[in-house]
Image (tube, rainbow, N blue to C red; front, side, top):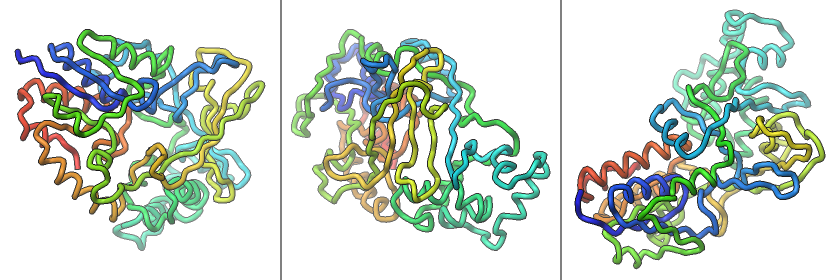
Length: 383
C-alpha cells in the first residue's frame, strides 16, 4: 500500500496499540484517542509508592498463550519473567487448590485416591440423567455431581454473574478443567509469564513509533470520523451508536484496596466459593512478580455487580436478551465502510490478552492487504 491514510484509533489498550504500530510502520498517519489519562487500558500497571509492589490497577492480568508469534511479539517490548499462576479457593472453612484436581478431590472427600480411582469415583457422582445439559448448573451436575458443584462452582458463579447457575449457559463450564493429577497450574498453555516492568511500559514501547500520536484524556466523537480515512474502534459497540437500541449488559467489579505488612494470604489469588462471603476473590499483587522481594503488600478485595452507565464494563453477559440486542448493533456496524470494531468492547466478547493481540495483528494485516476494502473489513467483525 503506497497511499498514506489518516487513521483514527479509539482506545490505547492492546488492540489500539498493536494496530496503530503496525499501520504506522506501513507509512500511515495514526492518531490514538483514549478517555483515560494513561495507556494500556485495563491491563494498566503501576508501582505502589509505599511498598514498591507492581500493582494491576484494574485487576490482575496473566499472560498465557500457545501462539508463538504473539509470544515473540510481546517479548520484543518487555522481557517476560517466569510465572506460574496458581489459584486457591476457600470453601466451607477450608482452603483448596484450583482448578479442581486430584489434590482437591482427595482433600474434599478425605480420601487418598489414585488418578484412575478418582476418575471412577467422580463418574459415580455425576448425574447421568442429564444427557444434554443446557445450563451451567446442569453441565456441572452431569460433570462432577452436586457436592463438588456446590462447593467450588455454584456460589462463586452466582456472585460473579449475579444470577442463578440455572440461568447461565452450559458453555461457561465447558471451559473449566477437571484434572485427575496434582497439576495446579491454572493454565495449560505453552507460554506463560509476566512482563518484568509491567504492562504499561510494554504498551508504551509498542506505541513508541514514528507516525503514532496519542491523545489522552480525549473522547472520540463519532462526528470526528469524517476527518479520517478509517477508524478502528475498541470502545463499547453500543456506545459508538449512542446506545440507540439499548445498552448491552456487562458485569463490573468493585475493588477494595488494602495493605498488609508482610504476606497476607501466601498466594496471588484466593477465591471465595461460599455465598456468605460477598467477595469473589482477594488478589495479593506482590505474588504476581515472584522475582521481586517486598516486605509490604498491596491487596484488592473484588466483588462483582451489574454494570451501570458510569462503571467500567469488564465481562459481557451475552445471555438471550443481550444476544438479540447484539444482533441489532452488529447489523448496524456491518454497514460501516470506514469503521472497524475491535477488541473486547468493540466485539462484545471476553478476550484473553493473547487473543486480543492476535486479532489486532490480523486486523492490521487485513487492512494493509485489502487496501481498506470495506466489505473485507466488515467481514472481520465478530458477532
